[in-house]
Image (cartoon, rainbow, N blue to C red; front, side, top):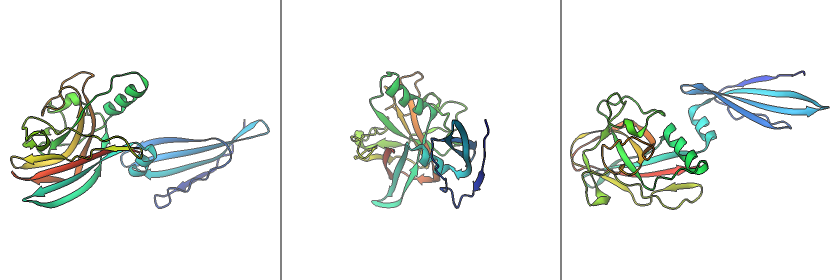
Length: 244
C-alpha cells in the first residue's frame, strides 16, 4: 500500500484553512499548555487502493480547541457596592474530569443524577490554581491548591450564613441551561474572591463540605482573570450557564 502525503502548516492567523476532500475525515488532537496540534486526515478510495490524500497540521490555541469540543460553561458575575455595580464580566469555566465522568455515567451507565447543584466561591488566600483533576473531596483539604471563601450570607436562602447558593437552573433551551434567578452572595467581611465552583450532592449545600464518595461531585471551577477584593456590605450576583 502506498501513501502520498502532503503537509501544510498554518499559523494562528489562518487556523480554519482545512481542506476537505472526498472521503471520510478524522481529527486527532494533541498538545499541552496553551497550544494544541490538530492533525486532519482525509482518505479517498481509488481502484481498491486507499490513499492518504492530505494531512494538514495546524496549531490552534486553547480557545479554539474548546470551541471544537463544544460542551462548555460560563459564569456571568456582577460585583455590587453601596447600591451600584462596580464591575461585571463573563468568564468560561473549567469542567473537571470528575464532572465529565459523572455526566457520562448518568447518560450512558445508569448512574443516579444529582438533583441539586450549588455555587461556591474560591478564596484568594493561599490560592495556586484550579485544575481538571480537582475533586469534591479536596475542597479545603490540606494540599489542595485552593480553599473555599465563606464570609458571606446566602440571600436567596433567608440570608443563611451556612449555605452555598443553590443553582436554580431553568429548563434547557437552545442547547443550553442556566439559572434565571440570580445566585447572590452578601459579604460579611473583607477578603479576596479568586473564582467560583459548581458542586452537587446531598451535603453540597453546606459551606466547607467535602464529603467523600460517589454521591458528591465537583462539576466545574474557574479562576477569575483578576481576583475580586470585597468588603462587608458588598454583594456578588452570579448566573451560570452550560451547554453547546
